[in-house]
Image (cartoon, rainbow over all chains, first blue to last red):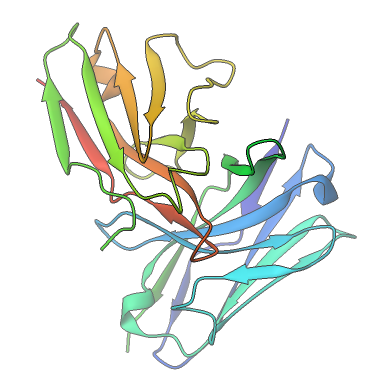
Length: 127
Length: 110
């Protein structure tokens, strides 16, 4: 069965960096992209960005693009998200999710669905 | 401030029907397909509806999705106490070139 298993909880000081891993299994890793989503305590979902597992090209939220790097290791079917210069408002649960996408050439529309999710990684930023 | 607008909460009695709206613009909902997610506290979201109206296997028929113009709607009939959760709409914004979510709607089954 499809699984995405994330690394464990992290506690970091302001200004530090964090790297969260997302090890996948049960499907062909390069057939899907990986999207990262975070959720601050009591808040909604925030799209952080995504990466193509086959090509490695990335797309980041503008608010994060100076501090974030997403990578993949196809040899281990693992995705990584690194966030630098951490601030207290980066405290959140970080999720990786498999991107199931369809491009409808006739209409030009795009259908992105995050169909499988990791369990989440709690990142706490505190001095 | 979310790009997609959802009501903060909706409520209805068990057995009743409820709808959750998701309002956007021509650059997101108007030209791309919507996914609806259900999230229980402390767990990851799960897909309820994709491609505006499609249900993944295992999602009951009492969950439905629709779209008109720049708004999408999630409908749940035969409400159960187990449906109490947060619901999010999501799609792609072609102008911003980013994924976008609604702010989420808390469903309360009275």
